[in-house]
Amino acid sequence: MTPSPLEFEKPILELQQQLDALLAKSADQSIDLTGEVDTMRRKIADLQETTYRNLSAWQRVQIARHPARPYMLDYVAQCFTDFLEVHGDRHTGDDHAMPAGFATIGGRKVLVIGQQKGRDTKENLKRNFGCAHPEGYRKALRLMRLAEKFHLPIVSLIDTPGAYPGVQAEERNIAEAIAFNLREMMTLKTPIVAIVIGEGGSGGALGIGVADRVLMLENAYYSVISPEGCAAILWKHRQHAPEAAEALNLTASDLSRLGVVDEVLPEPTGGAHYDPAATAATLKDAILRHLAALDSSPPANLLRDRYAKFRRFGVVEESATA
Image (cartoon, rainbow, N blue to C red; front, side, top):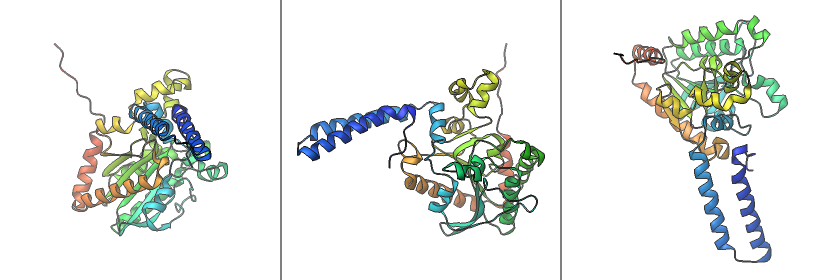
């Protein structure tokens, strides 16, 4: 089934509907409409090429949030085998917004963690719309330490608007939980590969994003704040979110140019939700490639390079003025 189109995709859908009508007419009335059908298909292909080659930052944010887009557990099911989910932070409880467990990918045992959103209201309430509480980050760190103990690589699949900002999370010290993860992930003596598969929102994403390799799907975004939040602060209204998205340099191509991400993973035309299986194959290949590249690095080199990687962020060069 074709996913529901976003606003900027509706002209493509209209042409597709015209093509379907032509094909139906040709079949029902036994009329040869080969020329018209070929012309319409070329129009659709040209419009798709033009539309998806020139996506704005805000349009990519919309694709990253598409409700049909594959989520963390979808990729776990397609890329990994023998997934054994582990629950609880051994302090407060479990967090369904942050599934985590041990699995196998390409014959390798790994720890896989990530944020999970819901497909409907019931599941979104269970998953808290992908916004983890402090216990989610503490559970993730507990399992990452287990992975380090047993010399297993860590794979982190990031997809969250941000950590949960409610009173309950503040009472259980969400800021401390994220900050603690940032420090401790920098010292883990095992390879870490993080992939932003959808939304990469603020500290909620970074809390499981300190890694030796940081990858992004082509239509994901990674930002210190959501476009709506930025617009509310700078323009005093969320309607300026498109301008904020441009200013934030939050797309995969922007962050690759700035050196924040190590590789941008291509998606099928229209986004990952148009061909989840192909996207999962791309993701699996990238994970295995980067894990293989990290195998040759001894722990001391991993720690040194990981620290240097993040210290390079935000460096500003100023030219001397006369």
